Length: 237
Ligand code: SF4
Image 1 (cartoon, rainbow, N blue to C red):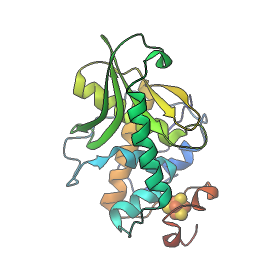
Image 2: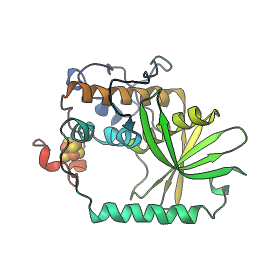
Image 3: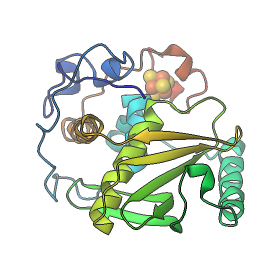
Image 4: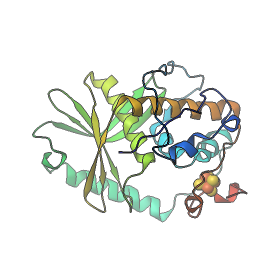
């Protein structure tokens, strides 16, 4: 589990006014956060549509992706790799529906696949890969066709889903799981107050980019630019 802090992060301020959120995300363990301080976003965060939960993953990966998706939308290309990823996702969901919950450390529970969720409170919407519901809890599960272990971008996408499933089902979501398909490995993610506060701040930061139209700083991890579909639009990448 990786913890991060937003001490220098100011929701509602232009992204270039202070240290970029992603620089803090990419420097885990530097600070300690004070939980429980941020207010939930209003149902209307001023945007005409809810943001996508996948935007949270992309923002944490590189804030500029949100800029290119919303502020100056650029042509998108569906690559063979993306198509293969979708196919493997669908095939894995089919297989997973026939397996037990033991590998999640759960004895029983109901499973729902491809659950459409929307939170007016958070102003986000998305489709969760799997929702496990037990007598007392809900557990969101995301399937990832990634080569390495899950990163913070996967974590905060899952935390957002946990908050949405709580709201939708009225049961606590204290944890969720990321299933890395190629490795057949499950990673448990604790959904604590720190992670919830941070997730709300990410949403606020994305809304801020869209409202102000200011291009945020690029990710400081240059390796991420190598295969990025927006590389041609980032002159400093
Ligand atoms: S090329 Fe690099 S800086 Fe530009 S959007 Fe992609 S990851 Fe971000």
